[in-house]
Length: 176
Image 1 (cartoon, rainbow, N blue to C red):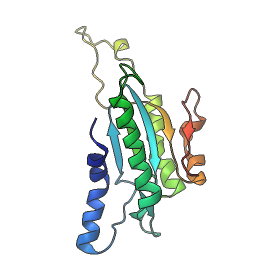
Image 2 (image 1 turned 60 degrees about the vertical axis):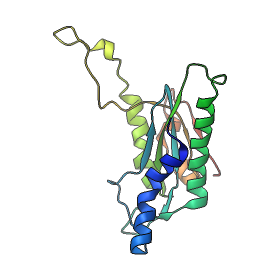
Image 3 (image 1 turned 45 degrees about the vertical axis):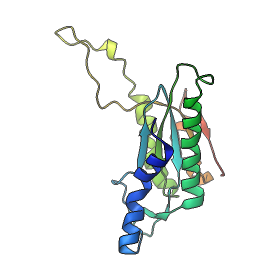
Image 4 (image 1 turned 135 degrees about the vertical axis):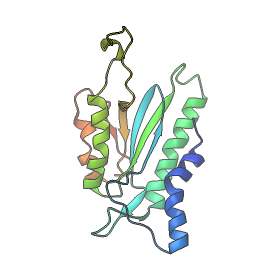
């Protein structure tokens, strides 16, 4: 698993560079999704306000260091520590699919629909056999998540559909 510092750089560095060069934080629209994906046997979802709310024309504002970045780093650190200690979960690796909520409930809802979509599109490759006898390859099937950590605000957590989904692992709020 990549170190949390490397992942933090991948998520935040482009914004920090833009801010230092242009003197302002760029706005992001819904199409410019901010996410971190780490493969694992069990994948945990994360919803963190890495950015603050944007103005009316921008979904996301400036970096939210205390409520967003610190909690993102805490989750990545915890996953690193758990995966390094083979006595905790022998033979199992934890992964993550972490999304930025931009401190906005409606944006978090749009982002978190990926979690539901992944759970609904779980496909067993062995049930799809091609005419030549080979098994179908499913490249674009998202990894289903086991549970969700976040959001940081109650109005964001209420919007997360995963918590109300049948058979879902649940939702753990941090600081709401």
